[in-house]
Image (cartoon, rainbow, N blue to C red; front, side):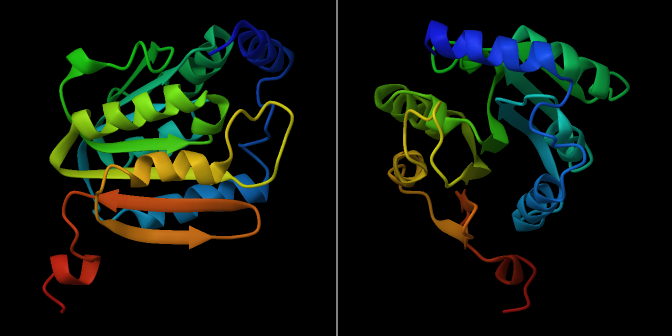
Length: 201
């Protein structure tokens, strides 16, 4: 990520504990609920959430996962996230600048969540991140992307380009949820629906 964007995020998180109002804004609370409801499994072993910001989604994922590795490239964001997740023994926070510092040594993940991250990357960086997702996703893994649709000054890629890079992995898509504000997609190695997995159909 460019130095300009680093400065932007450093200033953003230095100026507020919750710059996007993710803790209190109904839009953010509802979006997290939609994302969590879209996960095809009730429980996961190991999740990776890059671009965790203040850690609100991290906290929610910790209730559905045995272990969560969450990362951000902003030290200010991680400091806030550490305060909000400090009591959660199954959460680990690390500083990662993607794609160069993708945690390849951490082993595989059965859940990877990319929320409001990809459009800050350059096109080649996003393709590399998508490749990392493909390499790190376990045989029973789930990949999630959730992104704001409207344009804004700091955007490098369109949400369509971000999701197209992940779609190019060729994983079966289980969920496509589109609203005026955001798009949520869920892919999985196991292409069966939730009902099929539970033997209902």
